Image 1 (cartoon, rainbow, N blue to C red):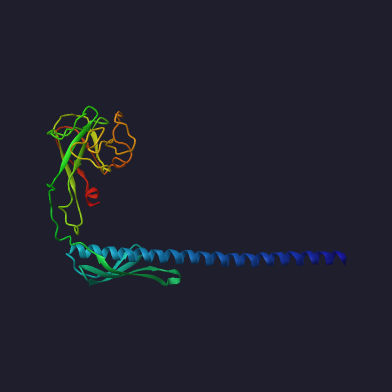
Image 2: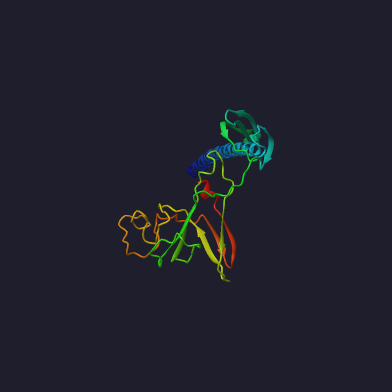
Length: 268
């Protein structure tokens, strides 16, 4: 009888443990399912927001290309969702845009996000104009072997780590409310050669004029403008004299004209 009681007690304990594990497993499954639904909801909400943002961009671009119109964007499929936009005119050639993005949510319920943008600036792309900047342009060469200003030279010189060309055009000729869609720098190589050379354009960060030299500007400081720079130093411009990253780079070989895309530089 004692053995039977002990066996019965052991079976009861095993049954209780299994029941407890089953309850824990059920609770964990429910928690995981709830967490997954939360993650899915966040995903669908963000996705719908991105679609609404795409609708704003589509409405802005469509009406700019058409010449500052106020055309709405019909429901358009994109990925696993869709977007649409209602467009109305605002003062001063601006637009009011109400955009929606829709994506399939959890349990077959759609998720919708709405963006209401007031007085969105637009540019009339149907009225573009090309212009050569010919105002008070300025250029000169600064080089290690040029101790005097070279503003009278008919050509600019480019020699790696030895000679730089400084170029300037005033942007006052560009209307303040215009958007620069494209700006191109064109230089003509007068020499000959068969080996491609990478020529980069960088933004000048230090003031200079026609009297600039490798070592100094009109203000009698190192043309780098760095305080304490000795006039005996023969190194080129240092950090802060010009942009650390090239705006544009073009491979130059033999004689001929070469172009650099400086849209960002001019628009800036």
